[in-house]
Length: 148
Length: 337
Image 1 (cartoon, chains in turn red, green):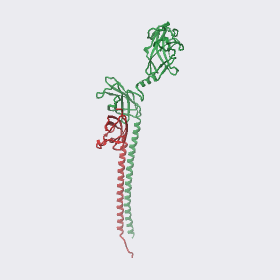
Image 2 (cartoon, chains in turn orange, green):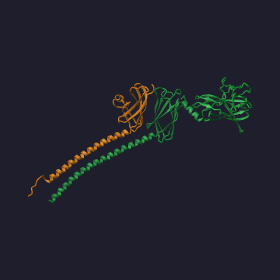
Image 3 (cartoon, chains in turn red, blue):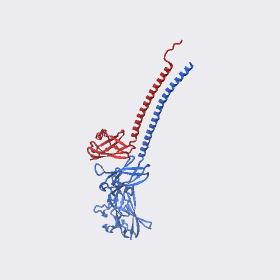
Image 4 (tube, chains in turn blue, purple):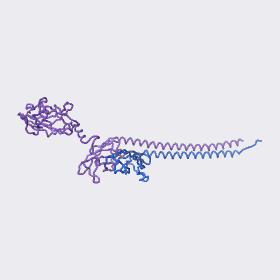
């Protein structure tokens, strides 16, 4: 007489099914989470990149007001509204960000915006003015201050 | 046992189906991600492609600005003629004007426009005085900026100048290229009767539209010089009197009148037969009357041509000393009676 050992076949099958199901659910969940995270990340990056690619803007000109102030006029000729984030003069950050409490000027599509910048300006000097938008796109303008 | 065996295989098959379903689901989620990312990347590429096209369109914009003109000082309007020289339609969205006479430049005008110019189209833009600001003719120097919706800025200046040129230089260039270095003042053409005496004097100068026959005559004509550099008027410079209806002409050569005693003292004719012009816009008078340029001073009566009755057309020829410059000017008709 054969001696029967172990669990019954039904139980073993059930255990196998359980293992397969649980493993399947875990793997499926993992794959869903992973792809979803990847999708979100990709979507965010592409959205940012697409929006940034649609930005086109430039400084049309700068006009001296006094030795501490000047005006710049920015033209947005891109396909999307922009919001300025920072303005640099010769690589040095101006207080534009602070003055505006971190919320820069919004410039709509196909419009001009004049803004006053506070920064020491010496006559006859050349300054590299760089504006940066919230999406990280920058535009530079070389300004020769006239003999004041 | 067979029944058992069948039941076991059946249950194993159920496990495989469940496992396979999950694998399929996992693959499906991967495929969905693939489709999504593919679409998103394509959309992004499409935007990039559109922007590249936009940049190309932008680089092709070409707005020709004719020089601005101030018209009618009483209504004080600035007029600028423009033409779209590019292949794409241009939308001018803003015009700004800077006053260059103040330092630093002051923006005196900025206004939104909505002018569409198809390829090859022309338009005249009128800018009226704004906020009581009047366009001034003197002194005046404005930069007019046309801003297009594609972000190009086209500058034009009033008064119009070329880089490195002053207005005076430009006038010189235009006149000297279009006409020549010398422009005569036609109504300054005069004659005088040369006296047949040892004093070598002459009578008063008179307009030379009509001149007396049978008299020894000398002529003078005023010019303005528009050349850039010093110029030596050569001895071949002449007025040719072509008698209408007669196949003959009389050459009336330049003579030098820069005598030491008197500006118009012909007795001191130096014989150098040259006259130098140095400055731009220099006004000068050239004297004519000698029939042969090889004669020696002093100017003698028989050197002076007397004229027969008739009608003459005059052609002025100006040469430099080495005959590398020549300028011919059909001049005027003269009656001799």
